[in-house]
Image 1 (tube, rainbow over the protein chains, first blue to last red):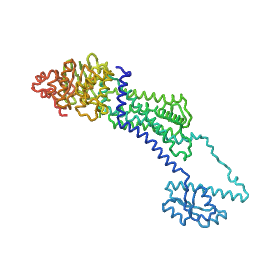
Image 2 (image 1 turned 135 degrees about the vertical axis):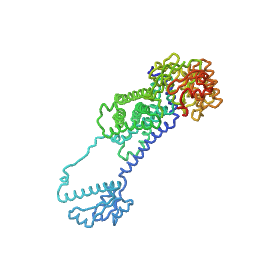
Image 3 (image 1 turned 90 degrees about the vertical axis):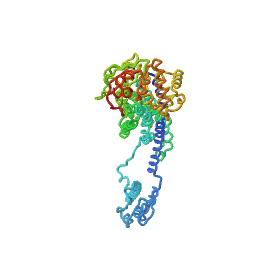
Image 4 (image 1 turned 180 degrees about the horizontal axis):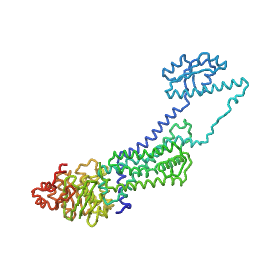
Length: 394
Length: 244
């Protein structure tokens, strides 16, 4: 029996499957939906982060008895914290209005201050409120700074050098470049690029493998003078094209959305260049042969469309977990990583985002094994189609 | 010519084919009758090389299916019980796809499509997508797919199912013409009148075995019944599968 590829058969299958997939609204919707969904989710999350982290707004604090501490109001105002005098700060905070933090200075504070005793001040808040806890940290920091300033003045007044109170002067030297800091944050985009090929190919694979079986067209197809390798290669190429297209379009969508994100407010002045985006698209698209091969093998065990959806969801959740695990653990680069699909691409994306441009050899080593594994999986799917059980339907 | 020689096939404890031997010669219509679950589908899959017999062999013209399934399949035109059509393709795209799998290309393929469409009266369907086709229209596309490459042997599983009276009549005329052209036609149907009118020879399969064979008249004589339907029921020796 001939098991080599018949190019005319392969071409016939490719044309038919491409036509069928292009006319399948579900396949196109999957690609379009994913391409749009990623950037929208990123935009929403970045806007939320930016609003949360933003330090530009004035913090209003209900203040009770702060007149007893001269200079505190002015010192806090310099930190953009406005003290609003109230008779009962606790009642104001408990009301649950715009003011979520209170500061209470008890009677006799001025006397304590003059006599050098610690002055007790109370911060009033609802600790279950995240916003109130952030406001508390900010106020505490400002109070700490003012307290430090008072200490310095007191020791100077007693003829002591304030440096004696500070045996260690701890400074942080940040060696990261702006591109690297951006990469850390933009790393969250990687996962969108890494699973794009899986999403793009998934519906096409389900329809052309499990769907073919479900609608009984597989038996008549295999009853033609064709071998399964030619048929499955044709199908693999079409689904790979859809997966690659989804990878490229997702990169384009990211390239359009990233400049519009409020990342400058998060201290990031650097975004990928056109060159970087082009390489990211290449890496995302290069996952398509593997994604399609893996999905075709999984779908070969499914007798119905629904069964295939279950198997294929698992088939891309697993590699996704691997990629997420690697991203979280950040292990040192090792050879096995270049040989492992998803991990290899993640390493390349990471380098591209840091603008540590990978060499041609890096691309060959990072993408070659993945392509090879994709080919082997496709060949395995062709073998699975030679089993008699492949004709069983639900 | 299609020949089964002592074909056996089991799936676990189920014996789907037990020593099936039959011969469908060129220029004849051979009816294969049997209740549901008799083993006809497994026998057909053995013929197509999709299932490998445990023992025995199947031949299509000069090719042994087990040794050269590709050549054997190229000599067959098959209409299965499930049409297996692609609903998003037009009838012409369907025929084009299967024609290419049989090596037809370019103007030769176009001519073959137009020719077969005219023969089975589906020219007006060619540019329409299969989605929305009636059962009869789907049957025509599936039949066109089986006839397109002008195969020496035709295997048709209930080909008049879903056809209106006129379409069924013209199909029977078409089969008669194909027989006259020297083709081997294997045909299954549950409509006994149709079998009696069309088939030169009838092979009855029940519980995986060939239980009787001969012309419709021979079978009626063997069973001692005037009607083929009564003879069929008597010869299969059971009513199991008939109601399904």
